[in-house]
Length: 403
Image (cartoon, rainbow, N blue to C red):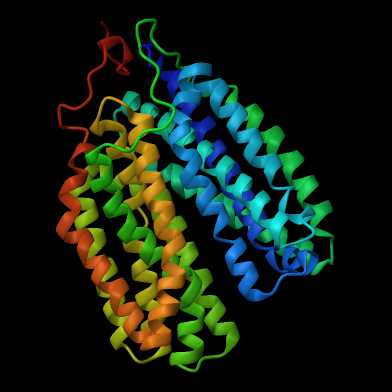
């Protein structure tokens, strides 16, 4: 992207605009997730068929993410984000219209593809704004995504409680979120490719640095997916708690992650990316040990809270490190995003398969091991530390400094 000079006020405004974009993106996910039972009934699919269909969003995202860089290069960062985000918000309508398994799989593939491409575009802009502000913002941006997901889930829960048709609910939600997203995109950074800049390949494998960073993200997202999908089952089946208490554990885990992300930037600014992830890995590992060995509901719930607290800032820092690790930030971010999406796809089924063969206790033993890997491999995120000489930009772009 070409070098564009923005004033401090413009960069701050762009930060809030991208935060709104993250919240909109999360709201789509929350709105969809709460109406999955209605969509299942409308499409007439079994639980096994639904599981198959729900793999297609991750497949669509994995295929489409590497294309996001070429879209941004051709249209510019602002126009690309505006178009991709609108496609994502409007895609919310599609699943509730699917009448059978085949169409449901197809529309969920499109749904995931638009989700993944807009995800890469907004994270690339978030990293650029973080670079210009010269302080951590990625954790807070992902916290806004979690907040948006909670708001979308709450609205979806209310709609389901009132018996609202999911088609009506999603049309209204898509209309509102599309308008909010388009307005927010008005103030993001309008980065354009330099005149002598070669267009990125339409499809390319991620660089080696992105693969290593993505591996760290894989561990964090695996722990997140396992905890989100299986924490309630763990409390109910292994510790024989009530359904209400089991559900409260999952809600508490989600809230812990959201709050930790919203305040995580201050921690990262003070201690740096590598040390923050090492401490995060320790917290998540301790949490996993409490889940596995605690034997009591209160201890296990504390463990899940610590897992959420520990992994909250890892994925945002992975995106930040990817955006600084090479000459093509969009390609690196797409690579990291693809690996993390794959982890989110693999985790629930892997936990279930291992639990079937052994037990859920053993399954969360695997989660604990992966959490420990965060401590060991945190050093691959050293590109995310802004005191390293990895960012080169004119003095005019640094807030408060004159050329």
